[in-house]
Amino acid sequence: MDGHDAENTKQTAADMTAFVQNLLQQMQSRFQTMSESIIGKIDEMGNRIDELEQSINDLRAEMGQEGSPSPSTPLKGKDGSKSAEDN
Image (cartoon, rainbow, N blue to C red; front, side, top):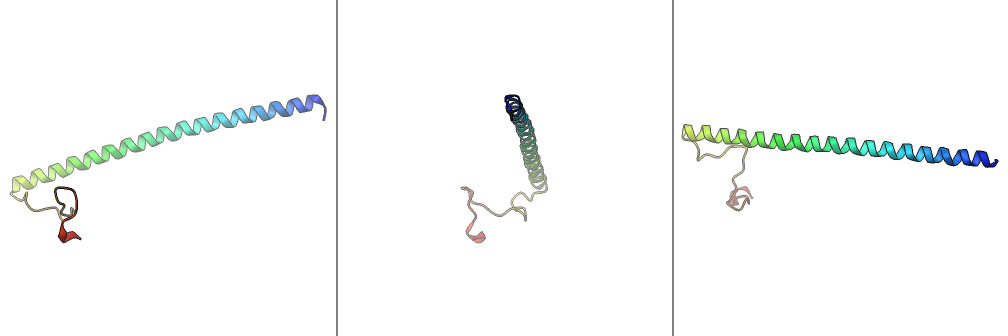
């Protein structure tokens, strides 16, 4: 191997390193964008569920059934812990 071949090998390795670094940066950027999009959609879904729950509670209040809890919602105390019946 002469000096010219060694120089080409070093340049090829440097080019490959730059290519891989660029590819990794692109992948990281795309992953970050997708993560932010997913988190945004989850937050939006949570807000919509909260609005739906409020609408259901409003309808119950109109029907005079506000005191009865939803069958899918466990009873909780003011501190957020489950009641003794649920333990």
